[in-house]
Length: 173
Image: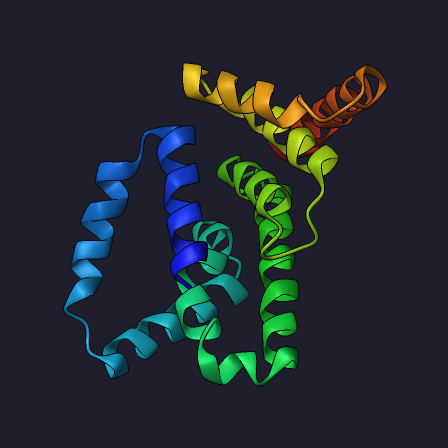
């Protein structure tokens, strides 16, 4: 859990400058009892299943602490269900036009925790996200360069074409 949470927070800090926001949200949850936290997770599950795109795009990170436990490690099926549901929600939120889900998909493919690591897909979704944001930041540009570094020029060109199609389907309305 610690590895997942620290990588997720670091990625969010680097990509969108949200470190203060993340810290504030974490502080709100710090005093929750286990029962309260599980009720919160149930609400996130319900909201995501009901099509609330913000809940779908955040599902993986918000539910991870309850899934990636010693008890769950003994139940690989539960972890696989969590991973499949996380990816399904990411894609659903993106298809609904929620651009931050594109960034979430990019990070999912980049870090390989929720789905198989795929540098091509990570770059493709980050490129699509970069088309959707109103203002590109230097940190986003750095991530794009980092994500394309392991790809061939042909893969980069192909991913950029796919990113335009993803952006058009997702966010250009």
